[in-house]
Length: 308
Image (cartoon, rainbow, N blue to C red; front, side):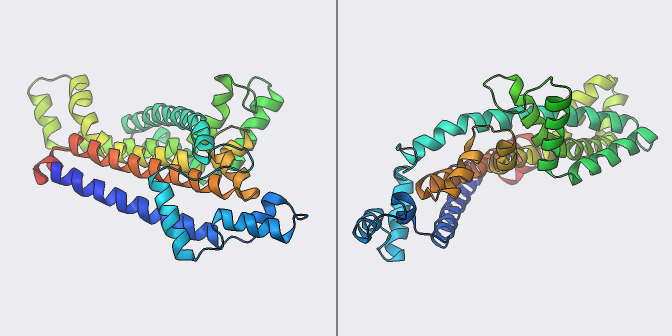
């Protein structure tokens, strides 16, 4: 187990380094002069050169790269020229709302996904099962921005029962969380349905029933645990998706998360904040994958034996 965790941690660190390198290269090839954007087009050439030197833009690219790595390791991304605060502080201030939104989207996905998956499994190969399958495919095909606009139009504009923008209340979480969750409810439901049907046909289920165990005990103690092995893996990836790809949803509903902060920072070439946001998103995504691997080991005894 220790060796397995050590290998996965080493892989995670290597992935983080690779992601940081890609972010550095991507930001350096973007068009535009950060110094001119900060000081304005009316700035004198002397002022522009002074600021470029302060930002390290005149250093060779390899020097900028190692300075960037050093800054990331020490969590020093510089100052946000727009907000006048540390870029990391500006990012961490917005991380909380993003995590809250992602957590609510995950709760909705799990509740509706397990409900639809169990419903379809109990009615396998019936019209109800086919209806769930078709609905899940349609939900996955719909783009999140369209879902967000439709939900806002229906519940905020026509029915006027939910706010369309963040107003500080928990109710304002519902529409953006639903927008994030709905494309994956059917996907999770189909995954749960498939897992339940596969496990119910296993020999250990028939043996458990032959020993006199009730259907409820067999389902929750044995079947559900084995069904959770692939489901937990995908849920970890899904949480990372919600954090990393909730940009469109946050913009649509004016949610004050790191997604909307990233869009604003890219627009105004606030490179320090862009680097901080992308690094934080990357680290969160990779750490979630590492957590999923650890949970996978504990849920699946076969992997425990392989890594013993």
